[in-house]
Amino acid sequence: MRSSSSFKRILLYRGVVDFRKWLSGLAMIVEHEMGENLMTETLFVFISRDRTAAKLLYWNKTGVALWTTKLDREKFHFGRDRNGKIDITAQQLDLLLSGCDISKMKSHAPCEIRRYS
Image (tube, rainbow, N blue to C red; front, side):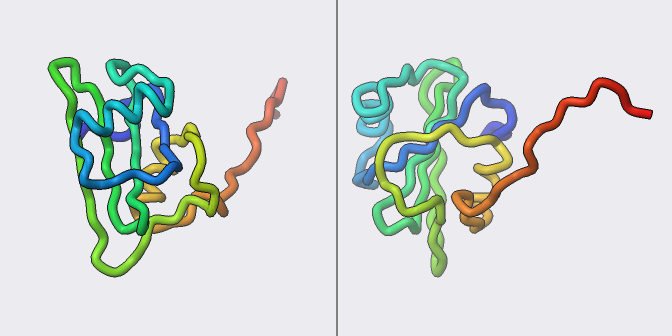
């Protein structure tokens, strides 16, 4: 799989997904439920109902690629809300796949400085 930082956008679908769906079923969710175009530089992330599996779907310029992971004992954590979609960063995706609850993590607010001396 490509590095998560190589995507222009990463979208986490928070709805319930039937994980028996394969490429075409997930592509239908992307287009009809998420209202997105699959053939962009976007990585689409789906989490199973029981939060023990993740599927990552993207267009690789020659077709659709699907990456899957399944946890043996733990669960993926991304908040309680199971509706809609959210933009996440490559760092948040890496943390999510590592077992961190990305809904509870808050990074420092960016600051602007005019001069540093």
